[in-house]
Length: 137
Image (cartoon, rainbow, N blue to C red; front, side):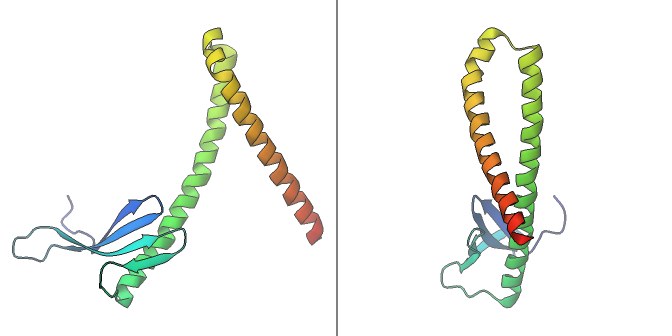
């Protein structure tokens, strides 16, 4: 463990985080974590924990973390989609070159339905973008 701990710790959860102030300046030289807030990334809400009032510095640290977290989530979302494209390519190669009839029987319907659903959404979204762009010209 590094000698210098951060002043704040964010316990990430699905839609935000619990925010803790980290304290190592106590007589027992233990690490104490005091919950100071709950953060909701989806709606931007910062709720102080209990009767606590957050300082401007604490709010700034939390807002900075929220901005970084949103940026990371956006990066991960698009990265996951690029990986999905790779998986589709790998799956096509597997189906063509190595899959047995039994294996194909197990996955064909699920894959076809998922790909049909994805194609329908992508075609509709692309058409919407084309129509919107034509309207801007």
